[in-house]
Image (cartoon, rainbow, N blue to C red; front, side):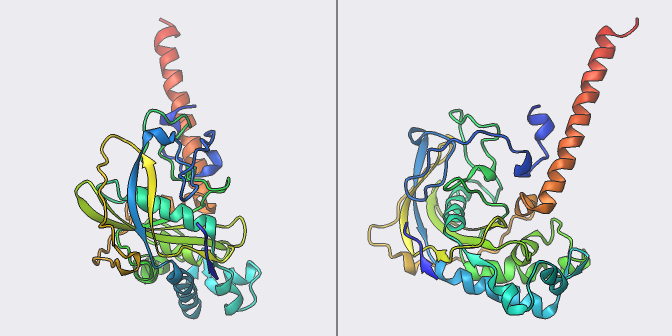
Length: 316
């Protein structure tokens, strides 16, 4: 491993899968992360962001996958080992090491962690404003780097990446995964994403920044099953990151001599418990949920149209 160098809203409201996300990308990226912002740089604010612990991500990911393999937890109606075997992994080592950190996913992760800090609580949405011209300006799937997006997102209010991976997104959801026979839901979606044999590229990053009068922290994990990870993680760094100006963001500054490596989490333990479709978002389950939502939305819209026509043009 090596560090990286630097129809309508009503119809689509429930659909979170990128398989039905049709926005035209606004390619103006953040100068540091190169992640698309959906708005011109002139309509952004700059956050003074510290990110660290990137070197811990790969081992933590290996550890949680190895632990769940040893326990052979249920996974999508079968066992994790059986699911891994069907995905082409002959043994534990092959399955565990198939999940590699990745530069694109890591940069998207730090951009999304920074964007998360501007909200009062964790949210699977991006800040935006009226200069955005895509169909869903707040969609997390619009956070693209080099034309590539994430296909799953986990969020945590803790900047302790290993704790987020092993405990908050990991062991803390094992019982819920067992209860659901390994099928993803709102109580186990973070763990499901991390141990899914089909996902092979991951990025996780934390972010600290002074926003709206206080020092805030968050962690983000992004994942993809489209290709293998390139093995690159993020170095400890202090960076000026752009986020869309939604009119309510007041950025602050760290002291000039602040050492990124010395920043430590204050022990937060919150996760995105009411937004877990985000962590399934663009995976197989997310596609199913998205398609169902889209169909139901179209049916509902047709019903409204039919009712309007009957009331205005039907027999009197």
